[in-house]
Amino acid sequence: MARFVTTFIAIGAFASLASCAWGQAAAASRTITCYVVVEEGASSDANSLYLQKMGLDPELLRSFCPSTFARGPTGFATRAQGTFSYQADAPVLVDRSGKLAMYEVPVKLKADAPPRSGTKVTVIVDFADIRKGKGLVQPSIKAMDYAADKAGLRSGWAWIISMKRIGEGKLEAVVGISK
Image (tube, rainbow, N blue to C red):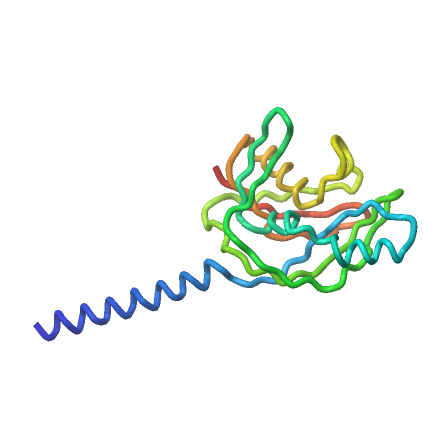
């Protein structure tokens, strides 16, 4: 009987520790590099103020969290699941094309961990493609759209694993994607 109780206590302690570890993994912090594109205003002061107050739209950062996506008659749409928080460093101008400017922003993101299942899809986002169609589309959203298309999915889950510049006007994104 004593051996049964000891085994039961050991299993209970392990389960308790595992659930604590799972909770930490569910809301893990990681540093990401986010790219934001803005249409520049008339002055550099106006641009700085915009980036400081509005530049990192939470919707943009949600693409680094597990999100559902669907392609419908109005285009590609995403919806983040779960909650997140972030702390952003100062944006750095890395590219310019006409009135559009691309900034690189290091961000410490605390969010739900992405699903372990799925496929990694690598896509290239060209600065010129960001302004096609109905207005401005942020690079991370465009990357998710390209990855879904490359995977042949009309709906499912997607999240940005990483993004980096690979030359003037080009970003490489690794996107996690699943049904």
